Length: 397
Image (tube, rainbow, N blue to C red; front, side):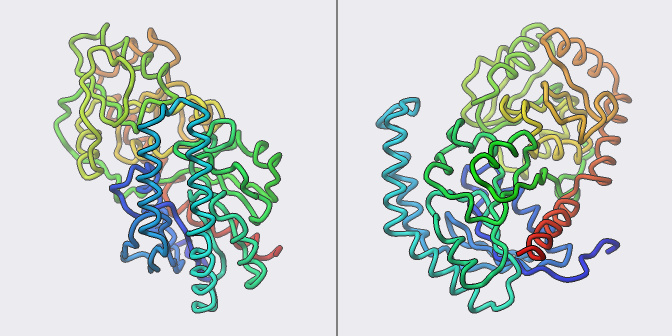
Protein backbone atom coordinates (compact mmCIF):
# COMPACT_ATOMS: atom_id res chain seq x y z
CA UNK A 1 0.00 0.00 0.00
CA UNK A 2 1.45 3.30 -1.07
CA UNK A 3 0.09 5.47 1.74
CA UNK A 4 0.18 3.17 4.76
CA UNK A 5 0.13 4.94 8.12
CA UNK A 6 3.61 4.65 9.58
CA UNK A 7 2.41 3.90 13.12
CA UNK A 8 -0.74 1.88 13.68
CA UNK A 9 -3.52 3.62 15.59
CA UNK A 10 -5.57 1.51 18.00
CA UNK A 11 -9.05 2.97 18.42
CA UNK A 12 -11.93 2.21 20.72
CA UNK A 13 -15.11 3.16 18.83
CA UNK A 14 -18.63 3.42 20.24
CA UNK A 15 -21.02 3.68 17.28
CA UNK A 16 -24.79 4.00 16.94
CA UNK A 17 -25.25 0.43 15.69
CA UNK A 18 -23.62 -2.24 13.55
CA UNK A 19 -26.93 -3.80 12.53
CA UNK A 20 -27.86 -2.94 8.95
CA UNK A 21 -31.49 -3.87 9.66
CA UNK A 22 -31.99 -0.89 11.94
CA UNK A 23 -33.16 2.36 10.28
CA UNK A 24 -29.88 4.18 10.90
CA UNK A 25 -29.03 5.34 7.41
CA UNK A 26 -25.36 6.01 8.24
CA UNK A 27 -24.62 2.39 9.19
CA UNK A 28 -23.40 1.33 5.70
CA UNK A 29 -21.07 4.36 5.73
CA UNK A 30 -19.67 3.26 9.09
CA UNK A 31 -18.97 -0.26 7.85
CA UNK A 32 -17.07 1.21 4.91
CA UNK A 33 -15.12 3.67 7.07
CA UNK A 34 -14.11 0.91 9.49
CA UNK A 35 -12.94 -1.22 6.56
CA UNK A 36 -10.94 1.74 5.25
CA UNK A 37 -9.30 2.28 8.66
CA UNK A 38 -8.39 -1.41 8.79
CA UNK A 39 -6.88 -1.26 5.31
CA UNK A 40 -4.81 1.74 6.42
CA UNK A 41 -3.31 -0.30 9.26
CA UNK A 42 -5.55 0.65 12.18
CA UNK A 43 -6.71 -1.76 14.86
CA UNK A 44 -10.37 -1.20 15.76
CA UNK A 45 -12.33 -2.21 18.84
CA UNK A 46 -16.01 -1.48 18.19
CA UNK A 47 -18.96 -1.47 20.60
CA UNK A 48 -22.49 -0.73 19.29
CA UNK A 49 -24.74 1.55 21.33
CA UNK A 50 -27.83 -0.23 20.04
CA UNK A 51 -28.21 -3.87 19.12
CA UNK A 52 -25.84 -6.81 19.19
CA UNK A 53 -22.12 -6.73 18.56
CA UNK A 54 -21.30 -7.99 15.07
CA UNK A 55 -17.86 -9.35 14.30
CA UNK A 56 -16.15 -8.81 10.97
CA UNK A 57 -12.79 -9.22 9.30
CA UNK A 58 -12.00 -5.56 10.02
CA UNK A 59 -12.68 -5.02 13.71
CA UNK A 60 -12.93 -6.69 17.10
CA UNK A 61 -16.04 -6.29 19.23
CA UNK A 62 -17.12 -6.07 22.82
CA UNK A 63 -20.74 -6.76 23.73
CA UNK A 64 -23.21 -3.94 24.09
CA UNK A 65 -23.70 -3.75 27.89
CA UNK A 66 -27.23 -2.35 27.50
CA UNK A 67 -28.65 -4.25 24.55
CA UNK A 68 -31.90 -5.14 26.35
CA UNK A 69 -32.34 -1.63 27.76
CA UNK A 70 -31.69 -0.09 24.33
CA UNK A 71 -34.44 -2.15 22.72
CA UNK A 72 -36.79 -1.32 25.59
CA UNK A 73 -36.14 2.42 25.18
CA UNK A 74 -36.75 2.14 21.43
CA UNK A 75 -40.11 0.42 22.06
CA UNK A 76 -41.11 3.03 24.64
CA UNK A 77 -40.16 5.86 22.28
CA UNK A 78 -42.01 4.34 19.33
CA UNK A 79 -45.09 3.61 21.44
CA UNK A 80 -45.26 7.17 22.79
CA UNK A 81 -44.62 8.52 19.31
CA UNK A 82 -47.69 6.65 18.02
CA UNK A 83 -49.88 7.64 20.95
CA UNK A 84 -48.93 11.32 20.77
CA UNK A 85 -48.49 13.30 17.58
CA UNK A 86 -44.86 13.42 16.43
CA UNK A 87 -45.35 17.04 15.47
CA UNK A 88 -46.44 17.90 18.99
CA UNK A 89 -43.41 19.68 20.45
CA UNK A 90 -44.52 19.18 24.06
CA UNK A 91 -45.02 15.42 23.68
CA UNK A 92 -41.66 15.04 21.95
CA UNK A 93 -39.90 16.88 24.77
CA UNK A 94 -41.66 14.62 27.25
CA UNK A 95 -40.50 11.48 25.46
CA UNK A 96 -36.93 12.72 25.31
CA UNK A 97 -36.88 13.69 28.99
CA UNK A 98 -38.23 10.26 29.98
CA UNK A 99 -35.66 8.37 27.89
CA UNK A 100 -32.90 10.65 29.19
CA UNK A 101 -33.82 9.94 32.82
CA UNK A 102 -33.95 6.20 32.20
CA UNK A 103 -30.57 6.15 30.45
CA UNK A 104 -28.84 8.18 33.17
CA UNK A 105 -30.14 5.84 35.87
CA UNK A 106 -29.84 2.46 34.21
CA UNK A 107 -27.47 2.56 31.22
CA UNK A 108 -24.86 5.28 31.64
CA UNK A 109 -23.20 3.59 34.65
CA UNK A 110 -22.89 0.34 32.67
CA UNK A 111 -21.36 2.14 29.70
CA UNK A 112 -18.88 4.00 31.86
CA UNK A 113 -17.81 0.81 33.61
CA UNK A 114 -17.45 -1.11 30.34
CA UNK A 115 -15.39 1.52 28.52
CA UNK A 116 -13.02 2.07 31.45
CA UNK A 117 -12.59 -1.70 31.78
CA UNK A 118 -11.86 -2.08 28.05
CA UNK A 119 -9.22 0.65 28.19
CA UNK A 120 -7.64 -0.94 31.26
CA UNK A 121 -7.63 -4.39 29.66
CA UNK A 122 -6.37 -3.27 26.24
CA UNK A 123 -3.65 -1.03 27.75
CA UNK A 124 -2.50 0.75 24.59
CA UNK A 125 -5.59 2.33 23.00
CA UNK A 126 -4.58 5.57 21.26
CA UNK A 127 -7.99 7.27 21.03
CA UNK A 128 -11.69 6.87 21.80
CA UNK A 129 -14.20 7.84 19.12
CA UNK A 130 -17.95 8.14 19.74
CA UNK A 131 -19.89 8.05 16.45
CA UNK A 132 -23.54 9.00 16.14
CA UNK A 133 -24.50 8.12 19.71
CA UNK A 134 -26.73 10.36 21.87
CA UNK A 135 -24.37 12.79 23.58
CA UNK A 136 -26.78 13.74 26.36
CA UNK A 137 -27.17 10.10 27.42
CA UNK A 138 -23.42 9.71 28.04
CA UNK A 139 -22.57 13.01 29.71
CA UNK A 140 -19.43 12.78 31.85
CA UNK A 141 -18.03 9.56 30.39
CA UNK A 142 -15.56 11.35 28.11
CA UNK A 143 -14.29 13.35 31.10
CA UNK A 144 -13.76 10.14 33.09
CA UNK A 145 -11.85 8.51 30.24
CA UNK A 146 -9.50 11.48 29.89
CA UNK A 147 -8.96 11.66 33.64
CA UNK A 148 -7.79 8.05 33.94
CA UNK A 149 -6.13 7.45 30.56
CA UNK A 150 -5.13 10.83 29.11
CA UNK A 151 -5.96 9.95 25.50
CA UNK A 152 -7.98 11.95 22.94
CA UNK A 153 -11.74 11.47 23.09
CA UNK A 154 -13.69 12.78 20.10
CA UNK A 155 -17.29 12.83 18.94
CA UNK A 156 -18.03 12.19 15.25
CA UNK A 157 -21.49 13.46 14.31
CA UNK A 158 -22.60 12.22 10.89
CA UNK A 159 -26.03 13.87 11.09
CA UNK A 160 -25.25 17.59 11.28
CA UNK A 161 -26.93 19.96 10.74
CA UNK A 162 -30.13 17.95 11.37
CA UNK A 163 -28.78 16.80 14.75
CA UNK A 164 -28.17 20.36 15.96
CA UNK A 165 -30.55 21.77 18.62
CA UNK A 166 -32.36 24.12 16.23
CA UNK A 167 -33.35 21.17 14.00
CA UNK A 168 -34.01 18.62 16.75
CA UNK A 169 -32.36 15.55 15.23
CA UNK A 170 -33.86 12.59 13.40
CA UNK A 171 -35.02 10.78 16.56
CA UNK A 172 -33.64 12.58 19.63
CA UNK A 173 -32.25 16.05 20.24
CA UNK A 174 -28.83 14.74 21.28
CA UNK A 175 -27.26 18.08 22.18
CA UNK A 176 -29.81 19.23 24.79
CA UNK A 177 -28.10 19.08 28.22
CA UNK A 178 -25.00 17.58 26.62
CA UNK A 179 -21.51 18.96 27.31
CA UNK A 180 -19.52 19.25 24.09
CA UNK A 181 -16.61 20.79 25.99
CA UNK A 182 -15.62 17.43 27.45
CA UNK A 183 -14.58 16.17 24.00
CA UNK A 184 -11.19 17.10 22.58
CA UNK A 185 -12.84 17.64 19.21
CA UNK A 186 -16.10 17.31 17.32
CA UNK A 187 -15.80 15.88 13.80
CA UNK A 188 -18.55 16.63 11.28
CA UNK A 189 -19.21 16.41 7.51
CA UNK A 190 -20.56 19.98 7.38
CA UNK A 191 -18.50 23.10 6.80
CA UNK A 192 -21.49 25.34 7.46
CA UNK A 193 -22.10 23.84 10.92
CA UNK A 194 -18.64 24.58 12.31
CA UNK A 195 -19.55 28.04 13.76
CA UNK A 196 -22.62 26.63 15.52
CA UNK A 197 -20.63 23.95 17.32
CA UNK A 198 -17.93 26.43 18.29
CA UNK A 199 -20.62 28.68 19.77
CA UNK A 200 -21.84 25.66 21.75
CA UNK A 201 -18.39 25.36 23.29
CA UNK A 202 -16.64 22.72 21.20
CA UNK A 203 -12.88 22.90 21.81
CA UNK A 204 -12.01 22.02 18.23
CA UNK A 205 -14.16 21.23 15.18
CA UNK A 206 -12.84 19.30 12.18
CA UNK A 207 -14.61 18.67 8.89
CA UNK A 208 -14.46 15.13 7.54
CA UNK A 209 -16.68 14.53 4.53
CA UNK A 210 -18.24 11.23 3.54
CA UNK A 211 -16.34 8.79 1.36
CA UNK A 212 -17.13 5.48 -0.29
CA UNK A 213 -15.61 2.05 -0.76
CA UNK A 214 -15.24 1.73 -4.56
CA UNK A 215 -15.09 -2.05 -4.31
CA UNK A 216 -18.46 -2.19 -2.58
CA UNK A 217 -20.05 0.48 -4.78
CA UNK A 218 -18.70 -0.79 -8.07
CA UNK A 219 -20.54 -0.52 -11.41
CA UNK A 220 -22.61 -3.33 -12.86
CA UNK A 221 -23.06 -3.76 -16.60
CA UNK A 222 -26.83 -4.14 -16.75
CA UNK A 223 -29.50 -3.25 -19.27
CA UNK A 224 -30.76 0.21 -18.37
CA UNK A 225 -34.52 -0.29 -18.39
CA UNK A 226 -35.36 2.47 -15.88
CA UNK A 227 -35.16 6.11 -16.93
CA UNK A 228 -34.84 8.05 -13.67
CA UNK A 229 -34.39 6.75 -10.10
CA UNK A 230 -34.27 8.33 -6.66
CA UNK A 231 -33.43 6.49 -3.45
CA UNK A 232 -33.98 8.12 -0.07
CA UNK A 233 -34.75 7.49 3.57
CA UNK A 234 -37.83 9.71 4.18
CA UNK A 235 -38.90 12.86 2.39
CA UNK A 236 -38.52 15.07 5.46
CA UNK A 237 -36.59 18.23 4.64
CA UNK A 238 -36.54 17.64 0.89
CA UNK A 239 -40.21 17.92 -0.06
CA UNK A 240 -39.66 20.96 -2.30
CA UNK A 241 -36.76 19.38 -4.17
CA UNK A 242 -38.69 16.12 -4.65
CA UNK A 243 -41.54 18.05 -6.23
CA UNK A 244 -39.06 19.92 -8.44
CA UNK A 245 -37.05 16.86 -9.47
CA UNK A 246 -39.73 14.12 -9.56
CA UNK A 247 -43.37 15.10 -9.04
CA UNK A 248 -43.69 17.78 -11.72
CA UNK A 249 -41.20 16.39 -14.29
CA UNK A 250 -42.86 12.95 -14.14
CA UNK A 251 -46.14 14.56 -15.19
CA UNK A 252 -44.50 16.43 -18.06
CA UNK A 253 -42.37 13.48 -19.23
CA UNK A 254 -45.26 11.03 -18.97
CA UNK A 255 -43.60 8.43 -21.20
CA UNK A 256 -40.46 8.22 -19.01
CA UNK A 257 -40.15 5.70 -16.19
CA UNK A 258 -39.57 7.44 -12.83
CA UNK A 259 -38.82 5.18 -9.86
CA UNK A 260 -38.63 6.17 -6.19
CA UNK A 261 -37.19 3.73 -3.64
CA UNK A 262 -37.47 4.43 0.05
CA UNK A 263 -39.41 4.62 3.28
CA UNK A 264 -41.53 7.41 4.77
CA UNK A 265 -41.96 9.27 1.46
CA UNK A 266 -44.82 11.68 2.19
CA UNK A 267 -44.96 13.74 -1.00
CA UNK A 268 -47.20 13.41 -4.04
CA UNK A 269 -44.83 11.83 -6.57
CA UNK A 270 -46.82 12.59 -9.68
CA UNK A 271 -46.48 9.73 -12.17
CA UNK A 272 -43.45 8.18 -10.47
CA UNK A 273 -43.67 4.62 -9.26
CA UNK A 274 -42.64 3.97 -5.65
CA UNK A 275 -41.35 0.74 -4.11
CA UNK A 276 -40.41 0.08 -0.49
CA UNK A 277 -36.93 0.42 0.96
CA UNK A 278 -34.61 -2.27 -0.42
CA UNK A 279 -31.43 -3.74 1.10
CA UNK A 280 -28.12 -2.54 -0.24
CA UNK A 281 -27.49 -5.78 -2.11
CA UNK A 282 -30.47 -4.92 -4.35
CA UNK A 283 -30.04 -1.16 -4.39
CA UNK A 284 -26.93 -1.33 -6.55
CA UNK A 285 -28.87 -3.20 -9.23
CA UNK A 286 -31.57 -0.53 -9.38
CA UNK A 287 -29.01 2.28 -9.58
CA UNK A 288 -27.07 0.61 -12.37
CA UNK A 289 -30.26 -0.20 -14.27
CA UNK A 290 -31.17 3.50 -14.28
CA UNK A 291 -30.12 5.88 -17.03
CA UNK A 292 -30.27 8.82 -14.62
CA UNK A 293 -29.93 8.76 -10.82
CA UNK A 294 -31.07 11.70 -8.73
CA UNK A 295 -29.26 13.26 -5.78
CA UNK A 296 -31.76 15.07 -3.54
CA UNK A 297 -30.26 16.08 -0.21
CA UNK A 298 -32.27 17.57 2.64
CA UNK A 299 -32.49 21.34 2.25
CA UNK A 300 -30.65 22.14 5.49
CA UNK A 301 -27.81 19.86 4.36
CA UNK A 302 -27.75 21.22 0.83
CA UNK A 303 -27.57 24.80 2.09
CA UNK A 304 -24.59 24.33 4.44
CA UNK A 305 -21.88 22.57 2.39
CA UNK A 306 -22.70 19.31 4.13
CA UNK A 307 -21.70 16.09 2.45
CA UNK A 308 -23.96 13.06 2.35
CA UNK A 309 -23.05 9.58 1.21
CA UNK A 310 -25.35 9.46 -1.83
CA UNK A 311 -23.38 11.44 -4.46
CA UNK A 312 -20.19 9.49 -3.68
CA UNK A 313 -22.02 6.16 -3.82
CA UNK A 314 -23.68 6.94 -7.16
CA UNK A 315 -20.44 8.27 -8.62
CA UNK A 316 -18.54 5.14 -7.58
CA UNK A 317 -21.10 3.04 -9.49
CA UNK A 318 -20.51 5.14 -12.64
CA UNK A 319 -24.08 6.45 -12.51
CA UNK A 320 -25.07 9.54 -14.42
CA UNK A 321 -26.19 11.85 -11.62
CA UNK A 322 -28.48 14.87 -11.73
CA UNK A 323 -28.59 16.76 -8.45
CA UNK A 324 -30.99 19.21 -6.87
CA UNK A 325 -29.36 22.48 -5.69
CA UNK A 326 -26.49 21.54 -3.40
CA UNK A 327 -23.84 23.88 -2.00
CA UNK A 328 -20.52 22.11 -1.96
CA UNK A 329 -21.20 19.67 -4.78
CA UNK A 330 -18.73 21.60 -6.95
CA UNK A 331 -16.07 21.05 -4.26
CA UNK A 332 -16.29 17.28 -4.70
CA UNK A 333 -17.23 16.94 -8.38
CA UNK A 334 -16.96 19.07 -11.52
CA UNK A 335 -20.53 20.08 -12.30
CA UNK A 336 -21.26 19.63 -15.99
CA UNK A 337 -18.53 17.03 -16.43
CA UNK A 338 -18.84 14.55 -13.55
CA UNK A 339 -22.37 15.41 -12.39
CA UNK A 340 -25.19 17.75 -13.33
CA UNK A 341 -27.22 20.12 -11.16
CA UNK A 342 -30.56 21.82 -11.85
CA UNK A 343 -32.44 24.58 -10.05
CA UNK A 344 -35.98 24.43 -11.43
CA UNK A 345 -38.59 22.13 -12.92
CA UNK A 346 -37.82 23.55 -16.37
CA UNK A 347 -34.10 22.83 -16.06
CA UNK A 348 -34.81 19.33 -14.73
CA UNK A 349 -37.11 18.46 -17.65
CA UNK A 350 -34.65 19.84 -20.20
CA UNK A 351 -31.65 17.92 -18.86
CA UNK A 352 -33.65 14.70 -18.45
CA UNK A 353 -34.77 14.89 -22.09
CA UNK A 354 -31.23 15.54 -23.25
CA UNK A 355 -29.52 12.85 -21.20
CA UNK A 356 -32.11 10.18 -21.95
CA UNK A 357 -31.24 10.60 -25.65
CA UNK A 358 -27.44 10.69 -25.17
CA UNK A 359 -26.13 7.29 -24.08
CA UNK A 360 -22.50 8.22 -24.69
CA UNK A 361 -22.66 11.39 -22.60
CA UNK A 362 -24.27 9.52 -19.69
CA UNK A 363 -21.59 6.84 -19.77
CA UNK A 364 -18.77 9.36 -20.12
CA UNK A 365 -20.12 11.37 -17.18
CA UNK A 366 -20.43 8.26 -15.02
CA UNK A 367 -16.87 7.13 -15.78
CA UNK A 368 -15.50 10.59 -14.98
CA UNK A 369 -17.38 10.62 -11.67
CA UNK A 370 -15.94 7.26 -10.61
CA UNK A 371 -12.43 8.40 -11.56
CA UNK A 372 -12.89 11.43 -9.29
CA UNK A 373 -13.97 9.16 -6.45
CA UNK A 374 -10.94 6.93 -6.89
CA UNK A 375 -8.68 9.97 -6.89
CA UNK A 376 -10.12 11.86 -3.90
CA UNK A 377 -13.16 10.38 -2.19
CA UNK A 378 -12.62 6.79 -1.07
CA UNK A 379 -13.01 5.66 2.53
CA UNK A 380 -9.26 5.17 2.65
CA UNK A 381 -8.82 8.88 1.92
CA UNK A 382 -11.21 9.63 4.80
CA UNK A 383 -9.49 7.10 7.07
CA UNK A 384 -6.14 8.86 6.57
CA UNK A 385 -7.76 12.21 7.33
CA UNK A 386 -9.31 10.84 10.54
CA UNK A 387 -6.01 9.39 11.72
CA UNK A 388 -4.26 12.71 11.03
CA UNK A 389 -6.86 14.45 13.21
CA UNK A 390 -6.35 11.95 16.03
CA UNK A 391 -2.57 12.23 15.80
CA UNK A 392 -2.82 16.01 15.97
CA UNK A 393 -5.00 15.79 19.08
CA UNK A 394 -2.65 13.24 20.61
CA UNK A 395 0.33 15.52 20.10
CA UNK A 396 -1.42 18.47 21.75
CA UNK A 397 -3.06 16.64 24.65
